[in-house]
Length: 337
Image 1 (cartoon, rainbow, N blue to C red):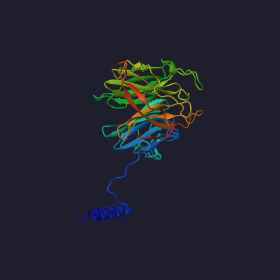
Image 2 (image 1 turned 60 degrees about the horizontal axis):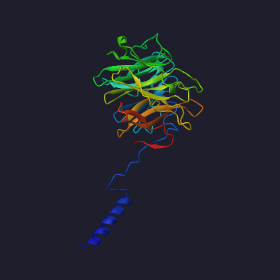
Image 3 (image 1 turned 45 degrees about the vertical axis):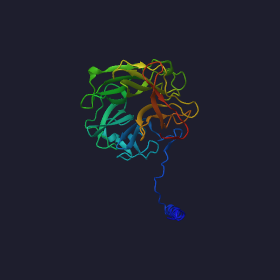
Image 4 (image 1 turned 180 degrees about the horizontal axis):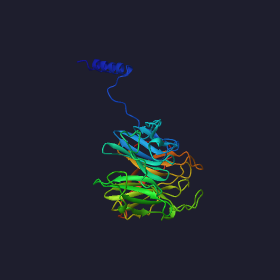
């Protein structure tokens, strides 16, 4: 065999294939890039991300007539509003109330999608066969008609028990919880439990606007190594010190102990202002991410922007529960991990 001739023919074949746009290997895909300073989605606060069948669905506060939804394959690049009702997953015509639609969260339970949300400072739930909606209420009423409540979060424990967390205005904004009844539309009032309110120095900002507001809100539960982490936001939502902290407990209803190292997410003093009211999800590779909103700029609150950053649990060198660490806020383009 003429080795030189064989090599020459081989190179010629490769060049012909390249010229035709044909290669024997798949090009390496670049990781998608997000930019919190620009904002992932405009006018979307209190963001919640549902991961379902390989896609991400983002719901949040924004718009006057209901709740919009956006869709992504990678957490970085999002569609225009894609809800079944002109971009809205939930429209005011399908539910009780007609203003103040805030802080939605969507869960798939028994092959149906349930959106827990705030409307006119009451909490409610609507149902749909699709994450895009339309979400409707078979019975148009809130959980408690006579009790102001906001910021619902549903946590389903490993044994299937469902707990609903929310905010009441008992001494400022305070976090409460109860077991959710099997109808998914009401709580077991006998299990109603006070979680906590303002108690740490960082939660008592003296800065304008709205200094010294008594606020703990936006609850979210993570379970890690048998410990329950109740993450929350503190200070008034318009205050530049609005940020995120957490407390831990050995049971979903507490008692709760706030992490001494709070806050775990605050503004950077330069580009990112007022990060808070968040949820958690994982990237396509499995990397945990926090999803949160920020203010429009360093002086103006709205329209608020959606942001994400990676996070993880790290070992506490003092022997306590693992520490939830957030790698943010970032304000320059970042690759999704």
